[in-house]
Amino acid sequence: MEYYTTIGIDVSDRTSKICLMAKSGAKRHILEEATVPTTRAGFTEYLKDKDPGSVLVTFETGTHSRWMNSLIGDGLGFKVHVANPAKLPTVTKSAAKNDRNDARELARLALADPELLHPVRLRREVCQAMLRVEYVRQDLIACRTKLTNTLRGFAKAMGGRIESCSPEKIVSLNRADWPEELRKLISLVEETLESINADVKKSDDEIKRRTCLSPFKEHMPRAQEVYGVGLHTAATFLAVIDCDVSRFKKARDVGPVVGFTPRQDQSGEMEKQLHATKAGNPLLRKLLVEAANVTMRTLSPDTDLKLKGERICAHGGKIAKGKARIAVARGIAVTMLALLKHPEREYVPLTENGAEELARLREQVARQGLARANHARKAEAAERPEPRPDRQGAKRKDFSNH
Image 1 (cartoon, rainbow, N blue to C red):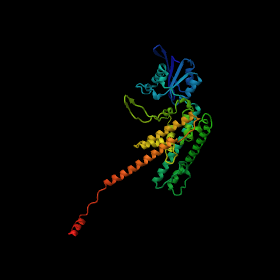
Image 2: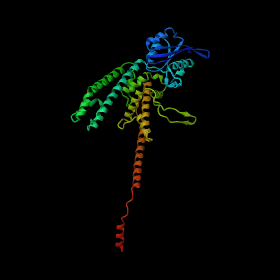
Image 3: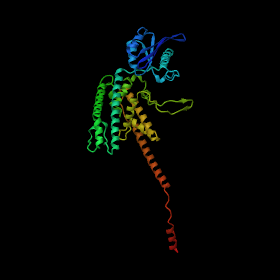
Image 4: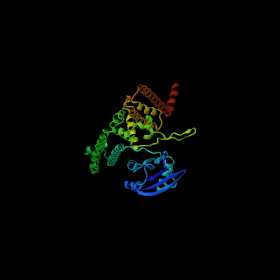
């Protein structure tokens, strides 16, 4: 449907700029501009005399976009496009950037072609709520880790050492051999660490409870079939894709969503190799990389995903392990989506061809390792200085012959 009237809203925390723009033939006219409070009452009051059937409303994704979309779209009945600011250089990189001009540009782009806004799809509330709990859990763990690392640093500076253990167990260690000052320090934060441990456990219980509810419960067991994928990785993955696998035509289409596809810079015959885009949800990327680390461990079972990582590492190079980690993380996401799209298929972690290739690859790597070791020994021997001849001994030998 083509809209001849659009409303662009530049949202700020306290007030928002609004531009009402109309199209007449090839010309565009600003009908009205206003400043309203960024509240439900403010937007409801402004839009009460507008026709929901003939007006397209657009604003950028951000902190307020979710409740605004629910209010204006679901509540007031307007067609809403939530624009992606990362793909709107005419707005974000304008030489005359201010709130009024941003609202005008959003309204103008919506009039020209709503697809120019690169509209984003907002998640359902149940999936967004899962992500909120996961973020709170990660922040709690980060706080606990930072605090325990600080205590370990102080212990070394005092000539002591806190024995290796997980951060949640540090408060239960025997402190008899600790310096007196260190015992005083940990007593100051002991209640805080115990409180964080309790809060982490509560968040874990809450996440487990939510995964037993629809729409997560239908997908969680299948997603966790992939080695290295635990409760939190599977729950976060499902929440990010909105528990909707039908939005992806192919399993590999999930790569751009998690940000593990390389940037493209191609012109003519020249194509540069660039880093990953790192688009999408940063928490999901972090959890997928952790799952990749588990998959690539020496003691982890052999899988096709582990083969992918070892194949890249075999090429060598300074950043080979980093590339392998990213490739395996992307492979985990693609495999999870493939399993979710085809629940009837049996998942085989290591195929026969994969097992054969893995054996050949490890044999090749072992031979290369021996060759490098032999080369290093020869180079060391070549650099070693030859022993100097014993001239006095040689002279004595000559005299004895006479």
